[in-house]
Amino acid sequence: METTMTALFFSEALYHLLVLMLSLSRGVHSVPVPTDLPLCMASEPAQYSLTFSGKWTRAAFPKQYPVYRPPAQWSNLIGVTHSLDYHMWQRNEFASNGVREFAEKSEAWTLMKEVETAGERIQSVYGLLSAPAVVGGTGQMDTEFEVFARHSLMSFMVRIVPSPDWFVGVDSINLCDGDKWKESVTLELFPYDAGTDSGFTFSSPNFETIPQDRITQITSSYPSHPVNSFFYPRLKHLPPIAKVKLTKIKKTNQIISLPLEPTQSNLLPTGNEIEEKLINTPLDCEVSVWSPWGLCKGKCGDSGVQHRTRYVIMHPANNGAACPLLEEERKCIPDNCL
Image (cartoon, rainbow, N blue to C red; front, side, top):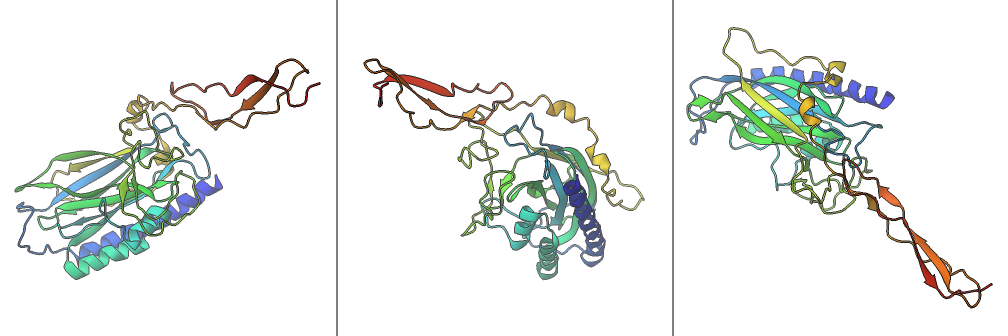
């Protein structure tokens, strides 16, 4: 409980800083910059609501599902609205120092500085967006943001907690379609590895990747190490671990509202949890290798018996394959007959 409350305290502090940065960025980068390669021809800006829904349940992801110190949860969301010439993060590219710190520790200070620098240097970033953390594998976080024709793309990240350097997110989703804004976009989200820590499990200790690897998507078969928390060889694809819905807000005379403060309401069930309970990922039993054969015991002139054993590494779940026999015996010639 103490660990969870501490994480919530830091999440609130980070959230307040993000809200402050969001307010400041609106004043600094509020004028769209002309471009020779316009992605969008919309004449007016648009406002969107973002709803992030966690789908990280024990039924869908039974292997090593974290239940304490800390339990499964989501970090704050941090994102940007930007133009084509900027990427917050990119699959198959190296993570920046800011992305590294956020993916490993949920610390956004360096990442926000990188975003601010990109906005000042090449004016490719319009503003920051943020949403409070979700204290649980399921639940929702919400925020709102604004886009312009020059800055019609949006990217964001949310760290998977606990994890070595794993996160979910979106890279450069374009909300403009010709001269119109899209009314709604829904995306299923899957885990990514930032390529900066070599841990295989949710609770792995820090183990820096040297040299740094590229950002890769984690699948049911990659990384192929059987210890990996997302390794489910019977599955062709992992179920989505989260989803995000972007909805265009109807134009009003009201000023865009800031996200709600983080509260314990993030722990309350949502309507989506009815759907999540239908996802039951089978987890097969995993056992160790056989021990060496024991001594051959028996009477002189008769055949003896020797045994070997193995133990359960992972118990089955959700109708996964049952555990095989854990002990075997065979006949033998006694080593020291009685």
